[in-house]
Image (tube, rainbow, N blue to C red; front, top):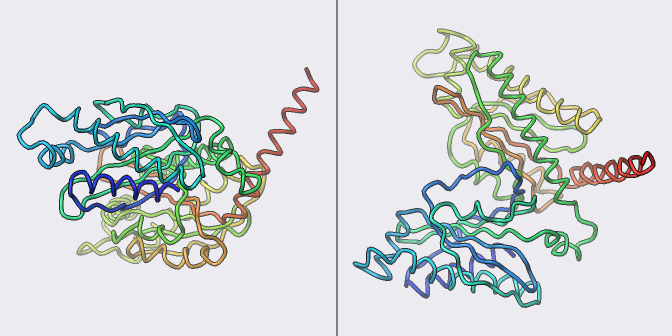
Length: 373
């Protein structure tokens, strides 16, 4: 639904500005009260939705894209940015919402656009909910923008009611919190072992088509480990350093061992052992939160392009599922160039069982509390 809506919004922009556009990527993630501003330097509009789907949608434009749109629609008019974005938002929201309305077989009303000088996504609903986000780009122009939809309270459950008993957004948020907590533990372990002060910068739980996972890692070279979870929630955990960060970590673990920019066997072994400890501590945190035991495979050392590392994992998961929850975190060093990417790719059915058990535990706790009262 989100991708179809984004394609219609792109088509409306193409018709208005005579610029060929395409939907670059669509993802779905859990928004929580810890959400941070990832879209610095953006402006845009926020539009309220009512009727068959309640909530808010936001269109965000980087400053350079606004300049190019102004040149295309109102050349020479330097003070027209707000008016242009309001009109663009109105036109594109019509296409975006029509895509959703047709799919749901309903009518969705939209408010006049509200211009926001800053990141409009910060005005999306504060309640824990799914956010549907798409990136749209022009083919031959340096123009891009993003469209976000945040359904109102209860709307997510209504959207999925026809699919059987859905996992609650609250429990998906618990899953998000578990990832954040686990990533913090990993960062502490990196600091303890290497002396490099680190922080957890960004974490998300996204819902994406399985085949898009390798694409999200891209052609950047990573060094790290892959571990398979042998029982619920199943799937894989990846601890991946970009190449320059791997050299920094290796130097801290095995001083003076590397030569000519290549990772020595001792350095690779050190990174593999660090990755094993990091992944184990991350999974232990999950096991404690779920009050269970999670067995893991021996770590597999990885030194390749991100897409190549992810391909065999996706092939395995894709045998039984079309979509994947991807839990990711970025761990950064405080005072030097250093990135460690943590990815969790759980088995869809096993994750659902785990999250549904959280519902059962919460229900039992409520009953116990009511009995005490």
